[in-house]
Amino acid sequence: MVLALNLRTMHVLFLTDDLLFASRVQAAAAGLRLDVQISAPAKAASVASDPDCQLILADLFVLGDKAAEIIPQVKANFPQAKLIGFGPHVDVAMLATAKAAGCDEVLTRGEFQRQHTDLLFSTAKKIGLVEGRE
Image 1 (tube, rainbow, N blue to C red):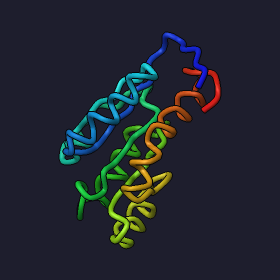
Image 2: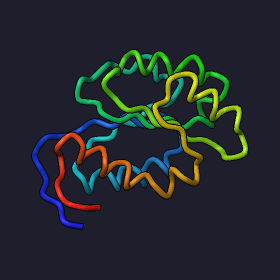
Image 3: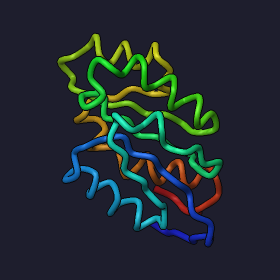
Image 4: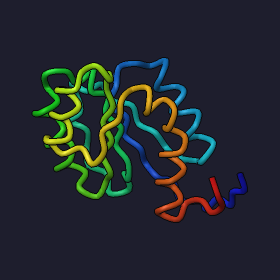
């Protein structure tokens, strides 16, 4: 992978309380010089809007029954950001609820774990933070 990095920083908001997995996402983002803010989903609606935020990652398992309430609030606070929700593959209803509530993309947790680096890279490339190929 060939990269040429600009000095701008993109903000990523990660709604989770899984700090172990969040650290893996942060490490991948750091390699692209992306700033990741981790927020407990219960506090998601109170996170201040940031016009530089381009990507929101939402752990649907942690959002649980509040997903239908929290996702539209977060989307309203960050209308410019792509919102990707991920959750257990066996909970088809949760994944459908997240899509209906406003997630731009919904993945199973396994898909997200395999694709999170590519998603970060694609987003950074789309807004001009990196050049090169995946």
